[in-house]
Amino acid sequence: MTAKGRPNLRRLADELGLSVTTVSRALKDGPEVHPDTIRRVKAAADAAGYVPNLHGRALRTGSTRNLTAILPMETRDYLSDIAKLPLMEGMTLAARELGYSLTVFSTTPEESPQENLDMVLRSGAADGVLITRILAEDPRIPHLLEQGFPFIAFGRSNLDRDYAYVDIDNERIAYEASSLLFERGCRRIALQLLTREDQYSAMRLAGYRRSIHEQGLTFDPVLIGHEDFTIEASERWIGRLLESADPPTGLVCANELGLLGALSALRKRGLAVGRDFSIATRDNTRIARYLSAPLMAHSVDMVSVGRALVEGLVCRIEHPDAPLWQKIFAGEMSMIQDE
Image (cartoon, rainbow, N blue to C red; front, side, top):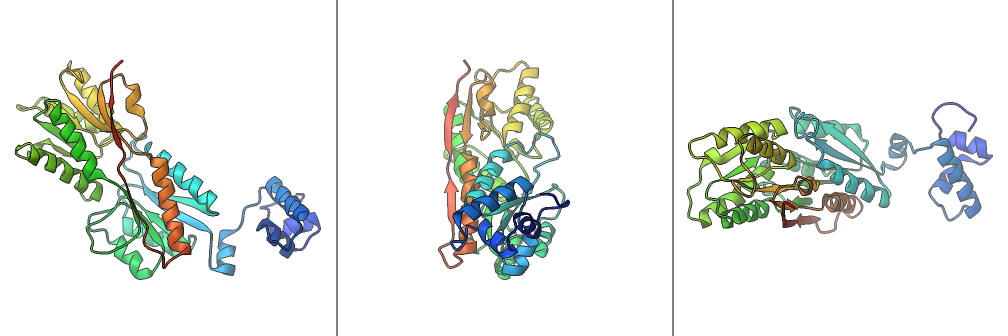
């Protein structure tokens, strides 16, 4: 295109000698436009870097064809959000395939989840919103239900409200991981959790406690860690436990960063995983498979989780009377042997 500035329908139409209406219909594969014209318009639009103006579309049609995913950073550690990359990949691919664009609204740990949500809603730039880091008593859920705004949650809450969600069976994960460590002879097992208020942590603690109860053991809160488990925080916490009068011999890690910190703490004290200490960890990034340590790893296909979230949200937008989309991923537990 010869005109300077951001490409728009008017500039495309002038360049091609067509009307704005024809260009607009061609970009939407309108049946009334000749196929050759559609190909010519799309080629020119691609060459010019044209993208639709979402706000203009919203004013004309009431729809932006855009979804917003609110993804808070877990911590301020530079590696903390590596596990979100497969989730974002799945969401992006599903949105594109369903004819939507995806905006990621990233927030810092100390920001208010409710204020961030209100900011997104006020912008009017999305047809639906995806919320994560669900709290046990999450006020955003009744707020969105009362607003009648399409949404889906990555996680469940304790609220007596029915809504669309996709979740991971965290209670089952913690139960299976703890039970496997008990089978390996561990009698004191530490459990890493993240934010106390998160439903994710509550569900994992419930699974852990169920396994403890089945073993006839007494729950010891000293073995439960609630922190932003960066590598450094995990190393410090595990180090303190290992130097206590009654140290654990097993650990259920919160995430891959917690695993790396735990391995460092063990190595500095001359302890070996598999010989002196047993670990079960989350491994959605497949990092554990490259650490040359015998581990029990639980993994979930986060690309599929991301896809399911977007598919469920689009269903709420396009078919609001359809049954609520509610899906739980179990994942799988596997043994990683030191070769």
